[in-house]
Length: 162
Ligand SMILES: [Cu+2]
Image (tube, rainbow, N blue to C red):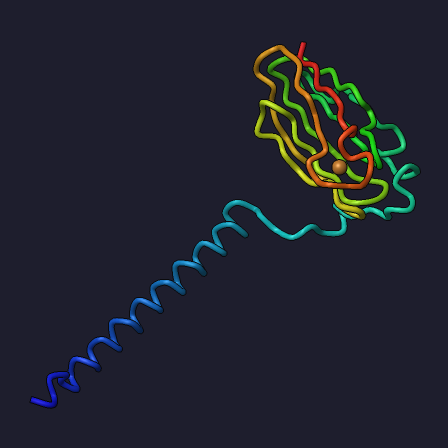
């Protein structure tokens, strides 16, 4: 028999595929809306942008360092540049809420704090803001994880949790 494929089968298969496609599109759209409005994920806005030529004159980056901003809250203003971090040594108490506010004065750098999940990029013209808590006292190596030139391998700092 030539027509083993009944025309109705093709129609049904097509309908099933259309439904699967619609369900997938709605699922992805739902995920997009949830991340944007439910989780507050968005592209950087003006507030998170900075003129890369004037980083060192723009607060808070005119005074890099660690400062206490609340009862058990600290802010770390961090600069990355070829090829160092400023400050090079960061001291925070264990259990405190620590917010890193960081940027670069030149090219793209990365920040990875060893033994933690803290990992972010320093992109020219943008301010990175990352929150975290170091639960245990100890010392963490902080390294640049984005190749940034000849001195990349010596670009590191330390986070000392007291
Ligand atoms: Cu680097």
